[in-house]
Image (cartoon, rainbow, N blue to C red; front, side):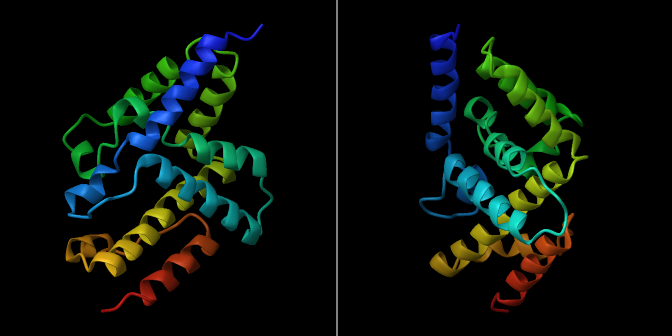
Length: 184
């Protein structure tokens, strides 16, 4: 029998992402920056689009589930920007997020499946996990370009200083085209 209270608690944690700021944008002076839920939708959408142009066989359901869950721990941990993690012990980010996932999912019957998907993402061994990593980064670069165009923010130049290397050539080609469309 479903533990309605536990499932509701999990849903409320997911809802929290709508109110969890993407702090990296705010640190760089982007006004009214997106929240984690908006970013998560972007990752799901980019993953869906990339899946359509891949040569490799993918499990679309697993791909989209991994993408939907990829930042769920931030409902508890908040969005700690990448530069901050360098001051913390190696591996601590994954450990902290794993604990947050376990707390949010509790003893629900969905916990084992969701944890498996989340662990698959962090192992980064399957094509689906690798494509979600590509989608996550590509979505960030797309958003950086949109913010640059909308706001003229020069603090986002750091995103483009070093070219990024993607797992899949299709994601790389889109990124390369995105970079070529930026005004210099």
